Image (cartoon, rainbow, N blue to C red; front, side, top):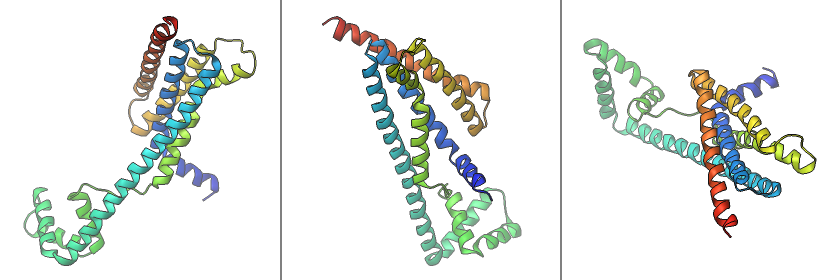
Amino acid sequence: MSTWSKYYLSFTKYLREFVYGGIDGAVTTFAVVAGSVGANFDITIILVLGLANLLADGFSMSIGAYLSSKSEKEKYLKHKKQEYWEVEHIPEEERKEIETIFRQKGFEGKLLNQVVEVIVADKDRWVNFMMKEEHNLISDQKSPFKIGAATFISFLLVGFTPLLAFIIGYFKEFPFNLFMTASFLTGIAFVLIGWLKGKVNQTNIAKSVLETLGLGLSAALVAYYVGMFLESILIGGG
């Protein structure tokens, strides 16, 4: 397998984390930009607030994703260790649990006994079956570190979009309205992320795109008018 193929497979494996990290990055950063524009802040302040939010929230979200995944893995291993102990020390009780599970599925008589014998014939198969059927736990092969990294990278990449126009406008004359340009670029980002979300969840693509756009627009409108209101009260009124 080529190096490119390995990178592609790794990306698709963590696509869900990339999508939701990107959605959160775009929504929160655009909300900060919209609120700052509504408050009539200077471009320097907009960039400071936007970049600070981008880095701090991205790091916080990635740490949360990492710890959540790590916790689930530890929970799985704890229950699996307990199941191995039970199979070793109280096999008859564990066997009865398997019989009960298959009996509830409609198995009975000779067929029930045959199925149970197949399960208990292999200790690893036995334990894995109990993990799934008794505890509703399935081993996640994803790395907690890579989950956190994918979340952080996507948060930064997509979340950077609302700031791009303001960064260009900070260094040189920009011929278009900065906020309108930022809104347009962020809209494109929402469309792409919404499309990816639909692919990941295997849902209607158009619906996914509209939901993502609606979420971003709602957050931006709230932030914009809150910023405008606070500016009029705290600055305009002062």
